[in-house]
Length: 115
Length: 114
Image 1 (cartoon, rainbow over the protein chains, first blue to last red):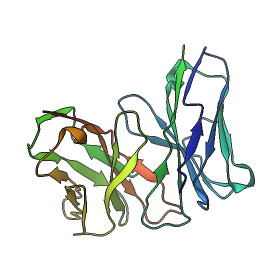
Image 2: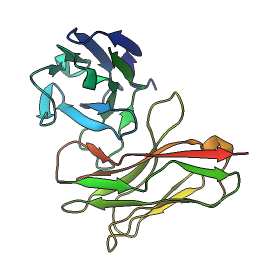
Image 3: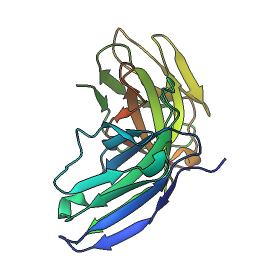
Image 4: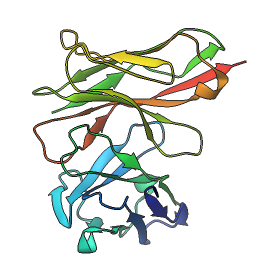
């Protein structure tokens, strides 16, 4: 079974530039998450989708971050304009709908460096 | 809101030593509890879980028991190996919410020396 795919693995940009990250979840997983993991900290939820609807985006900085999940499969997370404090690893995860067990399957992450 | 507190790291042990990583939580209702592990250069992966009070999760020699009375889920291993070197995250999932989103602790870096 293929895992969660993310790209790019690494991205370096100047502040005020824009960047986009892509995620392809495990086939059949209706729930998709984007987490931000700043160095030395635990992952923090940015946004959760169920199919192509947003379940929770309360911690997404909506003035600069946006995310979409077209057709309930792939998802894109965009940052525009980027700030220095956005330097982090952006993790995509997926799970079965109302899995109950709470097991999330994570991709390897996209590491963003903002200079 | 929900939160998870882990013992501060990093933790450095010699091979075959006993490991404990403390984890306590705050949550409404009855959450499910998890330990995730992140090996160098890899993504997060589930190590073990417990979904109700007094449940014991176990995997790869690691164990953790869901203690409702102390709101804890401490991770233990009787004899660590060099290959256990990784970052360990305690997490909870609030049952009353849809989906299975996780709230993570800050992580504990474990280094095991030969």
